[in-house]
Length: 425
Ligand code: AMP
Ligand code: GLY
Image 1: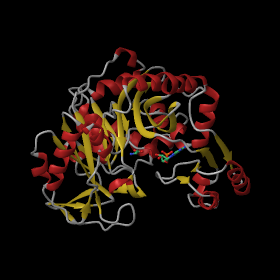
Image 2 (image 1 turned 120 degrees about the vertical axis):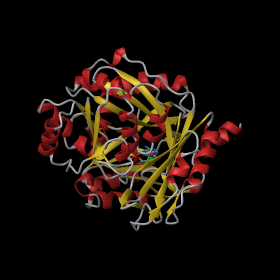
Image 3 (image 1 turned 135 degrees about the vertical axis):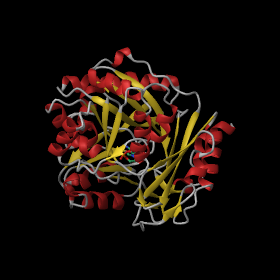
């Protein structure tokens, strides 16, 4: 079959690698893709916001399956439009993608269906939000309702900080996304991510991970899209995972059916493991980046078969097999990230890094410039390694990083520290 993958990040390189490895895949196209995805298929310069153009391409190339990587096209209803045109697309509809696209939607949904999450209030009026914050106390969390590229959350430890966040968001700092804010209770605990593959009525676990959101060592510095990740997340014990499936994922699938918007695709639950058990921090309607770069290298089963089963509503017939090895990925970013970065610096040494056993280098913000590979964004490479333990995967990943010659880049030197400390005992 012919497959079109939408996206251009490290997540999409990992997806392209997995999809192309499937015996079911004849031809793989990636729109727009990156130099990494081009190793596994054909990159096409489609404007993915132009849905009629995507549909025309699919008909032209007899595409049998479209896989949507990022959230923006999901929230924009690409899956709805492809489906209406008679094409098979993997991912939630526009309505279902509200679980990521609107925090207010998700909070109300959790309240209605008894899904454990932080207590909250919604506000469109800044003064009302601030009065509530004063009466509630700090720490408290202020969130823009809509998509804000991962920057829409402020965990405030003072009234000044909380009020400034309210003013900035309702004042238009994130455009329409902040016209409404959610103010919620601060949850204490360790964070972990749980992924489920869903077909509208059945969900099956798709692995666990933990990421590092802060830019610098010791989890210091500004928030980023993610500087590294590892899988599995041992804190999500089999018992806790069962509880997540029973108390969070299961009721979500049932609730979305009740709402008339059955959820198909990936459900990525950001969890806080509190003393009262796992609580939902947020949902994403897609795979994580860089979490995908540690989930897929551990998946032994055929990804295309699994995605097709989700589209066709037959996930109850599927069991996924996983490598017993652990995976860890280190993000190499351009100096200055998550602020402004210079593009166009040359990167060498990827073949040497990939020559190491159980090492894969996934591209994100790279560009081919003649024979030179150059940087083309903030997060540029994901260096993934497998190992018997997280400690071993970490050692191998950093050995690979040391072989990459890119003076204009940087990475954290402590990805996986929490797990490495735990393994040390
Ligand atoms: P989100 O974009 O909703 O994942 O939030 C970004 C980050 O803010 C999360 O990864 C948490 O570290 C933190 N966060 C969000 N909500 C809460 C909460 N209710 N309590 C504590 N931390 C939170
Ligand atoms: N790494 C976090 C995310 O993909 O949302």
